[in-house]
Length: 422
Image (cartoon, rainbow, N blue to C red; front, side):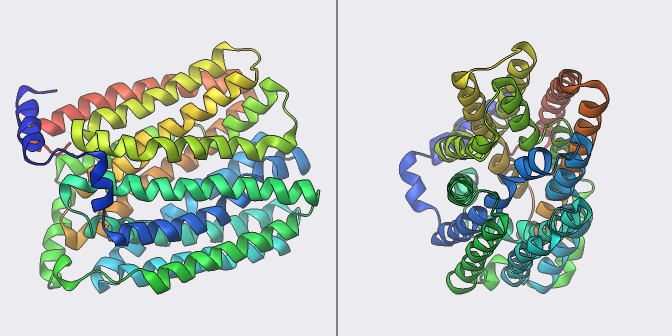
C-alpha cells in the first residue's frame, strides 16, 4: 500500500471510525431490502441447493451438461439484461419499479419448473428466465442500498443486506431437505413452495421499500450522459469491473465444489442441500464483521483476503484424496467466509467511485462482468472435469485464481495511487 494511502486512512479513521454499534445506524431501507432478499433467497436456494442432486444424481446428466445449466443460472441471463436494466432504472429514475419487475419474473418462473420435467433443455429455459429476473433486479436493488447509505458506512450497509440474504440462503436448503425427506422425489411440491416464498419477497419490496428521494438522484439527463462518459476513463472503476470478471472466471461454482466434497466424503446425496446450509450460516455469521472491518481497515485488503480463502479451499480439495466430516464442514465454513469478504465489499468499492445518477448502471456493469465470468467458469470446469478429471480441473482453476490475485493486487494498488477510495 502506498504511504499516502495510509495517511488518508488515518485521517478517515480519526473522523468516523466504524464500530459494531454503527450497524444500528444503517438505513431502515437497507433492512427492508434485506427482508426482500431474505424471502427471495429462501425461494432461490430451495431450487439451487437441490439442482446438483436433481440433475447429476437423479437425472444422471454429465458434468458438462450440469455446467451448462449452472452457467445459465449464474451468468448468461444476467449478462443479457443487467446493463439494459441499469440504464433504464437510471434514466427513468425508477430503481424500485425495475427491481420489482425482476423479482416478479423470478417468482413466476418457479412455476415453469413444474412443466420442465426431466428434459434438460426445458430446464435451461426455466432456469434462464428465472435468472433474467435476477439480472433485472440486482443492480437496481444494490443502487437502492447505496443511495440510502453514507459513504463511510457503504461496506457495512452491504454487509447487513448480504447477512439477511444469507439467512434466506440458510433456510432455503433446510426447507428443501425437509420436504424431500418427508416426500421423497416430490420435486413438484418443492417448486410450488419456492414460488410462494418468492411471492412474499415481491410483496415485501412493493409494500415496505420506498422510492429513492429526488435529492439522491440526478436532476436531469445531461449530467447522466456526462457521468456515463467518465466510466470508461475512470481507472478505479475499470479496475474494479476487471477484477470482478477476472476473479469470477477463476471461481469454481458452489455446485461443483459440493459435488466434489460429496464424492470425496462418500456422503449420501440426500444430505447435499445441507452443504448450502453450512455455507449460508458461515456467510451470515461473517458478513457484518467483514463489512465493518472493510470500512475500518480498508476494503481492498478484505476483498483480496476473501479470494485467498477460496484458494485455500482449492488447495484442500487438491491435496486430500478423501475428506471426513470435519474437513467437509471446514471447507463449507471457509466458503461462507470467502463470500463475506468479497460479494458486498466489491459492490461497496464500486459504489464509492460512482456518482449517484449512474449508480445503477455502474453496478450493472460490474454485475455483468461477474456474471459473464461465472458463466465461462461453469462451462469450462464442467468440460475439464468430463475431459480430464476433477483433479486436473481443480488444479487449473487454482492456478488461475493465484494469477488473478497477483494481477488484481497490482492493478488495485496502481489505481489507488491515482484515485484513493479503498
